[in-house]
Amino acid sequence: MPRGRRAALPVALLLALGACTAEPGGAPEGTTSPPVTSSDGAPTAERVHVSLGDSYATGYRPADAGEPGGSSREGFAQLVADEADLRLINLACSGATSAQLRGEPGCSPANRAVDAPDPAGSTQLDAAVRVLREHEGRVGLVTVVIGGNDLAPCAQSSDVATCASQAVAAVRANLATVLPALRDAAGDAPIVGLTYPDVFLGAWVSPSFPNGQDLARLSVSLFRDFFNSALKAEYEKVGATFVDVTAETGGYGPLTETTRDPAYGEIPTPVAKVCALTYFCSKTDVHPTVEGHRAIASAVLAVTGR
Image (cartoon, rainbow, N blue to C red; front, side):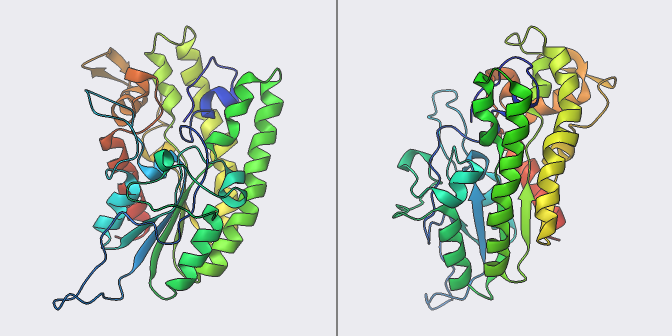
């Protein structure tokens, strides 16, 4: 995912929310969970969780404490699959935009989910449709997290507001193609769409943002009213459930409510939450921490009744 810039506004909040460098993928049987077998070792008709999207779905994390960065098995998609006793087929690709999700084949090895095989020329959407049809009657869940990377180019635009509006319109248009195809292939299986934590609340404490408190205040309404409302509308058109991760991670809480943070002292409670759940405050990196992925997984599991 890209890094945040100054508060130029709709985009400054959202330009980083996708993944690192883009090329979406789609391997028909990319999986990060082992096949389920019976007591005699024969494969069983296990149910699957099909995951699409960007680096939030691949479980990307930055390099830290000597550990290399990249996709991990601690992402929310794997956590959901494990808790729900589903086999994860993770077709996500770090850096994917909504257009690439349906229109660009291939995903570099560095951007694939852990253990995902070569996508062999498939787009994420094509691969997902194929997987869903091959597992008809055995699809336990489909999750989609996409849209943040669509806004990234607007960081360099001379008219950020117009660029951002056009980007959100493009996300809606691409989802309007992707989601009906997924619904047709998934049948009655639950589809869950997600948004992102409001990482720019972390600008409140970041020296990288001289106007950080203003940016943090602005981010609340922009996430709630600009980006998330657009995503929610598209998912609901196909009977999918929308998980407002911004809300679930405390992003809409009052900034007048404070708490004492061990690193930053007395700060707004929503800021402290995003500092704990993402790397933004410490690294200006938008990706979730392990705790953040657990929070996202819990939100998904809650709406699926798991």
